[in-house]
Length: 218
Image (cartoon, rainbow, N blue to C red; front, side, top):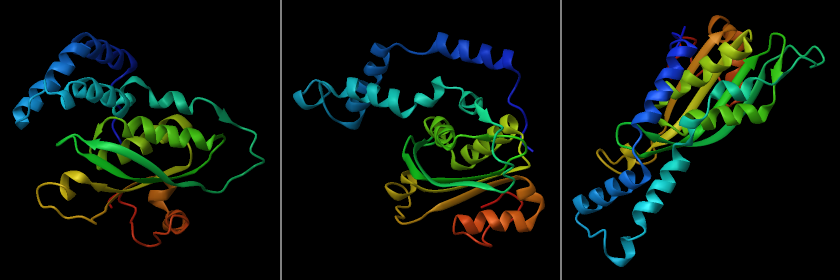
């Protein structure tokens, strides 16, 4: 079971502290200029003059997840679901994130399953949940666990299953240079962890029958 990440007051204080210490746009652009010089180029040459501003705007988009509370997307649920009591699966949710170790892209897809207890959530909200966590500095293991934990905490279903498949450019474009490698991580909670039949139903739906066990490891 995931440990709770502090209470609401602690999270609010942490967010306020981050806002207070966040550099200005001018400081961020100056940092980009420094990196350009460190790389060996001239930030004042014509082709690079606008680059710091472009990079900062790109960061605003790539890391927009820090501005959102993922739980907000799961607040609106539906209790009128005709007595549906089978597994809900949304697969192949594409995402783009960045490795917190090298700031290199992580590109892949997430598969989500849950067994509703009393309510269901709109499927677009599941995709938005992935986006919020993906648009932060991440490691794949943590992102997988965060998505599952948030769904489990807010929806309180009988169980949650999350599988993430991704390529890491920190491994494919630098260091060991191994293209074509895919990392798979999983998080199984509730009935998906405790009951092999339910787990296999989910894995079959996403085309991964029998390849993941209930201990949450990929």
